[in-house]
Each structure stands twice: as structure tokens, then as C-alpha cells.
Amino acid sequence: MKASDLFVKALENEGVEYIFAVPGEENLDFLQSLKNSKIKLIINRHEQGAGFMAATYGRLTGKPGVCMATLGPGATNLVTPAAYAQLGGMPMLMITGQKPIKKSKQARFQIIDVVDMMKSITKYTKQIVDSNIISSHIREAFRLAIEEKPGAVHLEFPEDIAQEDCEDSVFEVVGHIIPNPDDIAIEKAVEMIHDSKMPLLLIGAGANRKVTCEALHEFVDHTGIYFFTTQMGKGVIDERHPQYLGTAALSSNDFLHAAIEEADLIINVGHDVIEKPPFFMKNNGKKVIHVNFSPAEVDPVYFPQLNVVGDITSSVKKLTAHIMVQEDWDFDFYKKVKKEVSEHLSKYFLDERFPMLPQRLVNLLRKKLESKDIITLDNGIYKLWFARNYTCHQPNTLLLDNALASMGAGLPSAMMVKMLYPDRNVVAVVGDGGFMMNSQEIETAVRLDLHLTVIILRDNAYGMIKWKQQDMGFDDFGLDYKNPDFVMYAESYGAKGHRPKNDTDFQEILNHCLENKAVHIIDLPVDYSLNHPILNVMLKEKTKKL
Image (cartoon, rainbow, N blue to C red; front, side, top):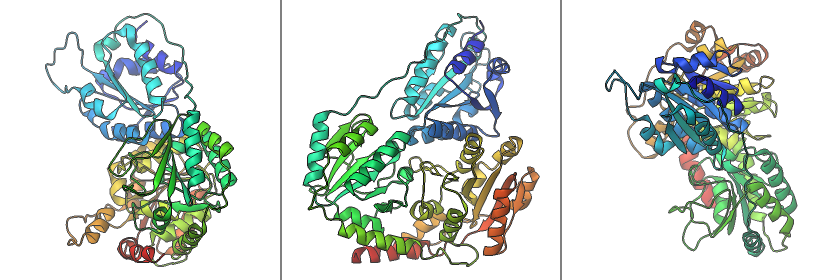
């Protein structure tokens, strides 16, 4: 059969549902083979949009999302989504075209070494040089993309290879079982937990698996040990749980960090050094048990005393079965911290000033959305407010990226979420800076007939960098810009544009957007005046007093 037909057949064999793409002429044989496939082709307006959608598919399903681009500039535009998926642990396959490699007649036009470029940001990258090994390359790519820790893989499919005749054969999809943790490691972990006086549980992104969520809930209920999460671990356990202390949105000086400083042992489930650290280890300081699929990568701020390596769910279940509640565990300080956190986080929830405070927006969305509804975030200062203040009831209901932390992913991620969960409300909260990096995907969302609400927080500046600039005592310089009229901009794509005049007007608009099917764009002016006094000044002062 034709090689491009075999490529598509091998993808079907892996259960691929969608391919997100910006095709080029080097992809045309593949495109023709895809025409009669059950795989749905989604045309994006930028390769970044395609890559972010594929990565989000992988994040939510556990199966590799697939995206496609041409050679040269098409491939280079996939670099950011590749790193986004690789650092974030999201399985994704990228397919890029290439000029003929056997009889090229275009010299070096558009040609760069894409495979070499992808090596540092993928788990696997290969140029297909023989049509008869297409199936094995695809099987290996999918195997590695899914294997813990999941990530990005890449295949380059040259134009002349795509046109060859080859044998019709695909490989059986064979899964794998992650080994259980060693019993000796479990025994040592139980001993360390029993010997501690103030153990504390940390939940990271690697624990965000359905069966792990259930196991961790049982662990907390059984032991009574308090827990906190990283940003990408939010919702693994319902955050209304009485033992939930909060989310580490900052690296230090939040109320939560007062609890971390007092803890003598942290049981770290699913966090690794790729996600921004929620605490810093010190010599002769608190002890840390690392529970993950692989051993800890030693870092100056992270060097655990014990690794419990293997299937996380099995590890947690074994710990739960062997740990006995200790009479000398002392959680009184954690209770004090929890009270401070609750009072602090809710302080501005009812503040109706306009432009709107991000804390107020968090509260309005939490009250309006159901437990299963999903918010996707781009990257900006508002991400810290949502991570700290938004209470997740279920896993993966606040999607944010704290690994690569790339701008431009919020809108494409929301589009993918809505395609996967059409019965849920999906809201993208994006800054004006991040939104404009992939705003062209509005056209894709409209074309796909999605029901989506996008809230643009407009401050006409790169707000997070301004916050950091102020904290460092520098002058206000170099970070302001102008924006288009977002209402007119939305409507030019066929979306619905809205610009609230006050708090009440915003609530009415939000209700309308959630209830009426369309791609809705809300231009919401935001008040960031409290970022510095709260996050940089007040928290440091009050945390010291705890």
C-alpha cells in the first residue's frame, strides 16, 4: 500500500481521534490519505494552536494528542507546544513534513535539521527514511509518549517516503504495567511518617490520575494528615476537604508556607522539579519522602531523603494500609494556618469595584460554575489569584500550566476541553497579552461551532512582569501596549463580543454567555492595584507573625 496510507492506518490502530494541523505542500500525500479516514482533521490558524490543542487532549485523556505541520517554519512553530507538553507531562505526537530526502531538487530551501532541534524537548524524535518501518516508528512513538512521565514525541515524514509503496502491516497496541513500589521503601516511609510530629502531604501534577485521586482521598481520610497542592495538582482531592490547607501559588511567604516551614516531614506525591517548586529544601531541614513513578532528580532546592518509586496509586494504597494514626502528631498549627488562609482568601470576594479585582472574578466564577465545569488559564498574574483563591471540587477543572508556563495556550486549551466535554461549561480566562498571541484561533472555534466563553482581563500591559518589576524596586518602564477593540475584533470572526460597564453588568453578561451557545468574548477591565501590596508586602509581614 502507499506509505501515507499506512501512516494513517497506523494512527487509526492507535485510536487517534483528531489531528490538529496547519498543512503544507510536504503534507499533501498524508492529507489525501487522511481524507477517507475516520480520524477528524481540525485545521488551525497557527501551529501553536494545533500543538496546544493536541497537548491538552493528551493531558485530559492520557492518550497522545496528534498535531501536524510542514517543514521549516511550520516545524519551528511547534517548538513551544512541544516544550509545553514535555515539561507538563502531556502525551503528544507531532508529525512534520520534509522535502524529498532521496532526490531533492531544492537545495537547502526551508530545510533545517528538525529532528536535531526536537531532541532536547521530546522523548523521541525520528526521521522516517524507509516506508517499511513506518508502523514500528509510530508504535514506539506512542509507547514512549504514554510511558511515565508522559511527554512529547516527533516524527518527520519526508515527501518522497510518503509516496512510496510498502507492506501493509501495523503492530498490535500493547500496554504496560508500572511496577509496584518496593516493600522496603514502603516500610521506611511508614517509619518516617510514624516518627514525625508534623507530617504534611504535598500533591503534585503526577498524582492527577483518577485512581490516584481516590487513593489519596482515602489516605487523608484515614490518617487525618493535612495536605496542600502545587498549581498543577489542584483538585486531585476536593478542596472543600477539612484537611486542605491551600495551593502553593507562590514559592514562599504565603500563609501556606508558614505551615510548610513548621512541618518536619513532607510526603511528596507526584511533584517533581520541573514544576515551579512549592518549597525549598535546606541542609538539616525538614525531611522529604518522594513518591513518584521515577526517582527524584536531585536539585539544590530538592534532595529527598527517601524515594518510593513505582505506581503512585499502589504506593499511596500501601502507605494507607500500613500507617497508624499517632497520638503525638500535632496539627494545631495547621488548623491555625487554615483559618488564616480562609479569612484572607475571601477578603475581596464581595468587593464590587470596577475595573474588577481578580479575587472578585474568582469568586463570581466559583459561585456560577458547577463542580464539573472547567476553567482554562493562560499565563499571567491572574494565574496566581486563581491558583490561591479558586476552590476546585474535581480534578482537572482548573487547567493551568506551571511547568513551561507559556503564554498563548489558554484559548486553544479551552477549545479542546469543550470538544472533549460538550456538556460542561468551559471558560477561558486569559490576559490581553496571552490572548493576542493566539487570538486567531477564534476563527477555528467559530468554525467548529463551539460554545465557549473567553474572559480577557485587560490591563493594557504585561501585568505579571510589572508586578515583578515593582517588587524589585525598578521604574515602571517598557511593559505597556495598546489593544484592539476586543468587541469588534470578536465580531469580525463571527463571535459575540461583550464589554461590561460594572460588576452587575458583568454578572448578567456572564449568565448570558453560559446560557447561549456561541463563542463569547468578554472584554473585562481588571484592577491589579492590590497585586504588590498583598502578594509582595502584606503576606510577608503577616506570615512572619504566625
